Image (cartoon, one colour):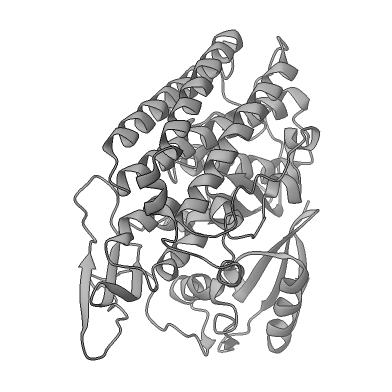
Length: 469
């Protein structure tokens, strides 16, 4: 099976990408060998690409000036694949390299001062440099630079077998492992032309929702800390710890590594369903007590309100993903747009809790999604009952290419892959929700005060490792 692709002359690509973006959801863009450039979109049938093949020396008109969401993608294509663009708004390298850090973009003018946070931070988070231009305490511009720990995973996987690649894909990041493994496995199963069966589909839903639960609890705890309420942070992190213990019971690993594998699920996954069901009941009660306490704290809620507002127009222009997008009225959820696996047999309702697009709305969105995730996990476990889960099937796989997307904790997690006749990877590309949303964090700070930065940042609580793949 192949990825749905529409190929055009390079001179016509801008027009066709623009037209596709009017009626479809933009996912991202990437390049591969042979001068191939693809812009990915989602519809009710999954993903499709609008692309072109560039002859040597051919330059492509940048779409980032009209569609700012493509800025990182096009800079990455230039840096890693040599695709040259005309009119690229930000000409800097996307990531540091060769011992050099690209200069930050700063505002100039009388009374403007510059503050730099990172790339090394006081905590144990990964590196990122944030350069704030401010007039007094009001932020005029924030420049976000990541990539300090870029690992080159995508090139590293080229030529590797599926068995070798799967655990490495699962470890691109610790927070979105199950979602990315889900997308990777789905792409390979589509190429192989197999269906894993209802029981495995349901088991994968349980794993995916457990990942969403522990991430949302951790995000709300971090948002409490950023608002200055240490008690809320302590209770939230305790709930997250309980959730991660449930993950360990469900899969054998707190971060759900290798729980979802090509052809099925990992050995021993959901072997103690009665114990997990009981643990989930206790966890749901603990999570409910935490969020009720958190949202009842007026000083925290008022601190969130109005901070880091992302309008619907801004969220649309930058293609905000996941809870951050839904909190701004961009209701893009792959589980509903193009249901996959066990989600095809589940009723998912829209969970938009507040559309004001500020830090409060993002936190309220995650609270609403927590409740739905517990319900979905219970339904999938009930449907499984005591049915035996088969071991992961061995995929008889040859050449083909496919792209699949799933809804992870922070939004759309995408994997695109092409295999040779021996089933080895010719190219692999991952687009994470964090990669998509990081540029929005910078724009969310416009007009806020400098002390709002931790507050706004933690309301997104994005992953560095996903962007530094």
